[in-house]
Amino acid sequence: MSPVPRNEDGIPRTRTVLTPPPGGAPREERWAGANEAKAEKLGVRSLKRQAAAQGLELRHSDSGYSLIDSARKPVSGDNMTLTEVESWLGRV
Image (tube, rainbow, N blue to C red; front, side, top):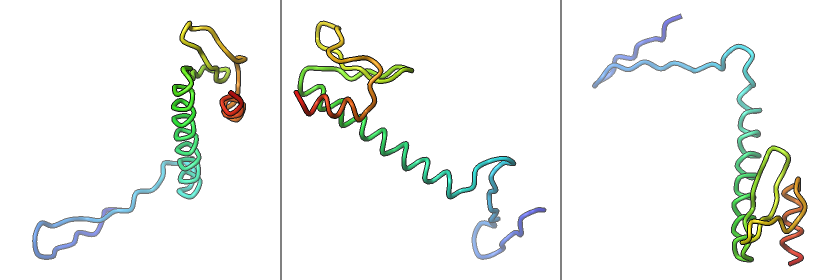
């Protein structure tokens, strides 16, 4: 199916509606996932700033997060979740 051309004053343009590829998630599901990813990204940035204010560095690996001091030694347990990191930074 070809788009219907619009011939008004100026440059002729066409309008088409983009459809998701076969097997793709509906639009509503993608927006929610994007919002959650953005919230997590902003949370990580906030925790990095809090850690830096205390002279620490927040690092991420496949197994979780850890806090590293200036001597490059972990000051907390490895494999921490963001919630655990936040509570640990709140205690110090």
